[in-house]
Amino acid sequence: MDEKHCNGSLSALEENIGNKGKHSYYYAHSHKATGPKWDGKPQPRLLSKNNSPEDCYNSKTSFDTNNSSITVYSFSDENSKIKIYIPLAVSSADDVILKHDCESFALTATDINFEKKRLAFNKLFGTVEENGKVKVKSDKIIVTFTKKEVKDWPRLGF
Image 1 (cartoon, rainbow, N blue to C red):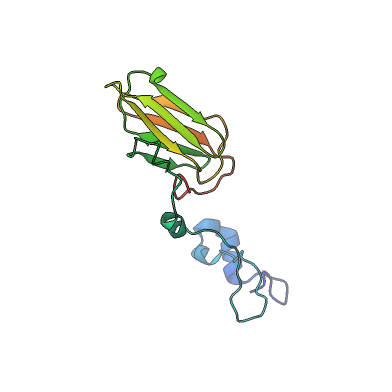
Image 2 (spheres, rainbow, N blue to C red):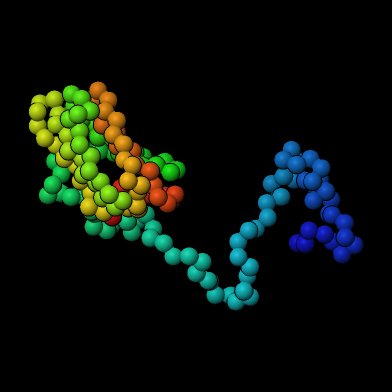
């Protein structure tokens, strides 16, 4: 429907929404479609093409199994950051070494039993800034990377 009718005035619905805003009885009808214009063809049109999260979960991982002794970890995908949580008790921050570039990382840590542990990814899901940070808590290590491009990461690596 057009914003204005033939005579140039707003409809009663549009006038009510304009006067009362989000408190209008008809507020649910105020949403306007923002998608692409219909091309008149009945066939569907491809709007974009991306890997689905299911494709990512079924693909081969970049987790470096040969060089990683840490297999239990979790991560959180925040808007512009990725945080990796590793449940490992270490004595101090000096026992943790993080080496990384924009596409991969390797974390080496010496636990409280003086055993060397390692977590490595050869290819991260996206690219990160080269300013990775490590925070050591009493029972875990938190690694924080800033994303170069803000997008969803369904998993940590490819």
